[in-house]
Image (cartoon, rainbow, N blue to C red; front, top):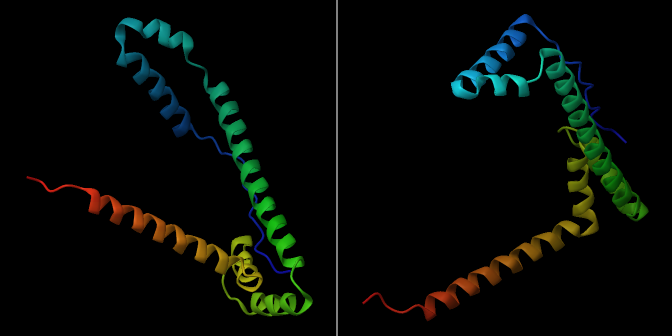
Length: 147
């Protein structure tokens, strides 16, 4: 199965400009309430702690995205392998002819077209639109005039 490989994210680079911006932020926070500047300064953390926090957030964010992509691929592969052999061959031919990015969502589009899930979702959406339209029309008829 062809797919677009996700890029590995590089570690965060820290520069003197980033450190200076962080220090300016600390000063701005203290100057925003001059009467409480000492208390604010005590609650603020150092540049080293900020770097550690940023790296931890970055690591968690990257891992969440990797988990999401893996979950999407697992689901679409499950749906793909549930197709009949002739539909699977048709899907594979469409996928190999497709020039767009080889992502899980694009493969899911081809699989959903063949297994009928796309038509079912479209029909459900149209039914929901009709229910909303009927509800609005019923409310408009009940509404009294503006006299």
